[in-house]
Image (cartoon, rainbow, N blue to C red; front, side):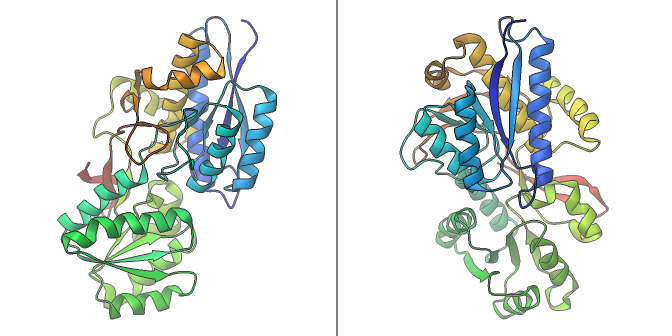
Amino acid sequence: MGSPVRIGALVPLTRPGWVEAGQHLLAGLELAVHDVNAAGGLLGRPLELVVRDTAADPQRAAAAVAELDRLGVAALAGEYHSVVARAAAAKADAFGLPFLCSSAVLDVLTEQPTEWIARIAPAQSHGWQIYAGFLLSAGHSRIAVAAEPSVYWAAGTRILRDYLTPRGGTVIELDMHALTPTAACDELVDNRATALLLLVGHPEPAVSLVKSVRRDQRLAEIMIGAPAGQPEFAEWATLLGDDSAAIPFLRYLPERLSPLGARIETVLRERLTQAPSFVAFEGYDTIAVLADTLRSHGADRARIAESWPRVAVEGTRGPIQFSRIPGLKTWQWAWPPIQVVDRDPADPHRFRILHTG
């Protein structure tokens, strides 16, 4: 084979990054690279992944993009944390470096419209509106959000309020920067909330908050929800046991995997020694798209970016194409499949599909 075509991969692999999410994302990226090379590479050239740990740090991510640019990568892939992806996208846009974002959902990844950035994950507004519709259909109109200060959580709260308020819902904000889990329970009782959404970090304060609510007899009927997907990963069930169940969250998988998706699921399960999350599939699909683009258009950065609107790739979760969506400033797969699921109280290691978008 000839000299490798290099793709930079941004992944959170150390704290305070969500390490388990990063491991799943990297497993998907690496498996796709393996499959490309096993099939002969890119016109006789192997694909090589150059991995950098972002540790959920926007400045570290921006520095990694600058380094990868100097190393001459053809494109960037990955990142899980939205605020980190936003910093990486701004830098990639400035360098003229194509970036296919795998997992970050924050609507606005760049301040100005850009041709250089595309995204596999759904936009936050799309997924969270589906989640808000699920809440209303389940009979919840007084919804408390336990939130920490961040652009991502603030955007989530705004999306929920904009959707729920015109439809008769009420959103009650609990500032978890100021409240202890016990004090938050008192607020839930005082505000007669029927649902509590965890717009907070994992494992803390999310785990402590769930434990406090589950042990408060006054809140026996309240539904806990986690639109950002904290219960998706095995660590959630390990830390919370039976308390991990019946907490609906957003997951970006179809009800039934295609033959390709089923094959990839089997291999990912072996690599991860656990069921792969949707984040692993996002990683695989990212490389599948980039490999197809590189095969068709070569490793020239400008030609890769120009190809986003012509992408037509069969991914693990359905056909992937990019378009321009009003309000978004990057190219977007519209849309990946979206489910609201929870862990089954009868078996917290099994998921139940509650709603599809």
